[in-house]
Length: 194
Image: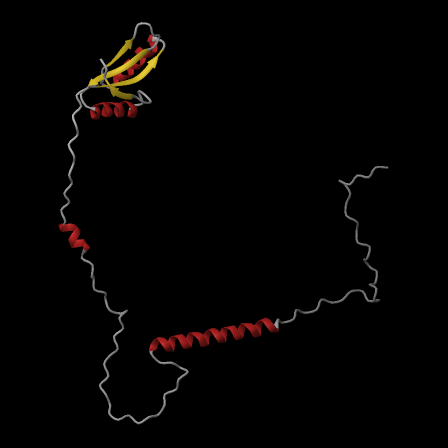
């Protein structure tokens, strides 16, 4: 016959009312013993820590508790000056770099940029369909720039081009303006060969 272990309850203790093996019913709980060894160790550690603090404090005051003063005959009392601790005094600033940096003049020589004789073009897209090229041209026009769609004969590509630019710096400025406005993802700049 199959046994159901899920609904099986714990067996009840059968030792109720029965005497234990020794013949007595049960032992009374013994009182807890005081942990003598840990208490002694704790007192010893506390005493050692107190002595260590006493020694350190005596050394900081300038006297050492282990060395007792020896009675000697002093020839003449000397005027005792107060001991000056260098830690107690405010440090004097010995750095002069602050004044040097304030008074220093830096001369930077910027080389003159060579003027380009050829103009630059910027291509922001190339599409197979003219409708996509015109759509990108409109996005660029919303940013205030003028773009052109060029189609070469014998090619199926429509290129969206800006320029010509006299300097590459102006082309880079317009490129960053379009990228910041998310009108284009990237544009290529090169010399105009026309």
